[in-house]
Each structure stands twice: as structure tokens, then as C-alpha cells.
Length: 279
Image 1: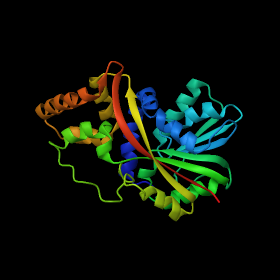
Image 2: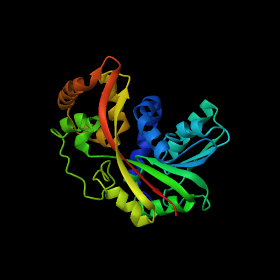
Image 3: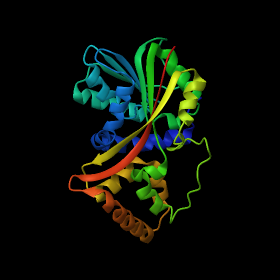
């Protein structure tokens, strides 16, 4: 099942901004990347698949960990994201990583290919998570692990709500349907773990990763980053009058003060790390 055209367009439109802010995004979510590596038992010399890699993370970080004797493949259904990932791999001079356009439920690899499969904040947007996870298990080697990261409850993540709560005062934002392709689709404890079990993963396991999102930038620059990262936010902001936008930005920057430090922005965060093995 392919992503619908509206979703594809949103991510295509966001790709230039994810590339623009790639280094800050890499730093912000580095703790999640290393949790995936740790829980997935990923090490030097291994072959690893990163699904929904976006502009190349966590694939590029993992490529540095598996070393030249290892190999990392990153796939994403959005052409613009894959092109951005390839540019960064060329810039870094990496020869052990390859990026291709592919859907998570139709992986272009033989069975029993990879020592590990990861996806960081991708599974929430899979049209058919069970089919995608079955594909991940197919390309995994026996007894190897797949590891996924999904956002926990919105109210536990001020990275999102410090901005969204202000905008919702001005723009009507009805809650998504229970299985909509949404950031917090798998926020409820056990929901994604149960999907892994349904797809055939052995011993599906879930843990909460509590960490800090660190962004070495000012509140003003963080406002820009968040608005540019999210096509949904940009669409809502476009609905505001100039006077409303000025007031929204003022209130958001005020809310950001709580998370501003001498080193930049610092947000407590919670993510679910969910893993399972192939029989």
C-alpha cells in the first residue's frame, strides 16, 4: 500500500528544510539513534537497513558505527529526501552507505539480508504497519532484531506542545482519527508492540526512552526550525492573519523561555523504543 499523494507532497515540500537543518536535527535526535543501535544490537561489520531514512538519518550515523567493513542501506518513498541523503553521503565521503527510493511494505532486498533493521519516527506514517513489519522481518537474518522509535504521548513532549497549544488557540485542530497517519499514532503504550506481535515478530518488547532534545540555537531560530520542519504547521500558520501570526509568535517565544538555556533550547522528551526478533 503506497502513501497517498497528499502525504507524499507534504514530505516532498518539507525535504529542503530537513536538509537545511540536518545537523541540528541530527543532534536533537541522536539519543534516539543510539537507543535504536543499542536495542538492535548493531555493531561493526554488520549490514543494516534504515527505513524512512528521510535526508539520511540515522543511516549515516550507523554507517560510521558499522565501519567500512559494514554496509548501510537507507530507503524512503520521497525522492527529494533520498536525493538529500545522497548529497550528504557524498559530502562526507561515505562509501559504505547507499540510499534508494522504496516503500516500507515493498522492500527491494532478498530475504535474510540484514543484521538489523531500524526506523526512527517512520512507522507512524506507514499506510499498513503490519505489512511493513512483515517485510522488515523477511529481509532480516534469522534471530536478528528490528527496532523502531515512535513518539510517546503528546503531553509528555513539549518539543511539540509548546508550539501547537498556542496555534490551536487560533486555528481549529480536530483530533486525528485513532489510526490516522499522525505523529502520535503509536503513542499509547503497547499499541506498536502489539502490531509487531501481529506481524510475527518474536518476543516484541517496548521501553520508554526519556532523554533531552538539545538544539544549540535561540528560541527565535527554533521557531523557524519547527515551522519549516512541519508542513502541517506551515499550513496552519498560513491561515493566520498578520496580526494573529505576530501574536502567536510572541506567545510561542514566551513559552520557549522555560526551555531556553545558555547552550540553546533544551526539551525533556519521551519516545517508545519497540523491538522484536525474527524466528
